[in-house]
Amino acid sequence: MGKICKICGKSRFMFSWEDICYTCKQKKDLAEMQQKIKKIKKVTLIHSQIAISFVHIVVMR
Ligand SMILES: [Zn+2]
Image (tube, rainbow, N blue to C red):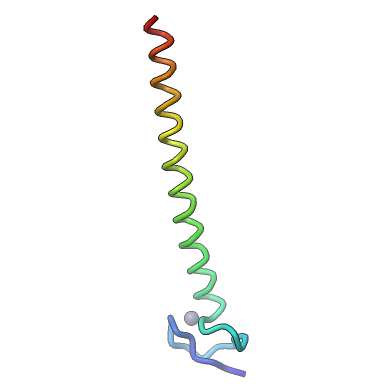
């Protein structure tokens, strides 16, 4: 039941609908997860910057 992984080129067990092995899938998922976290962090950063400038405006008054 071995198939050749599209990413690492190794013959591993894979489901028929998959073309990458479990190890590569995990790495891919992890990379996607990190990308998502980066996006969330960016948005959070913008939000906190808005919050900080809002606080500045309030303090300045
Ligand atoms: Zn692989």
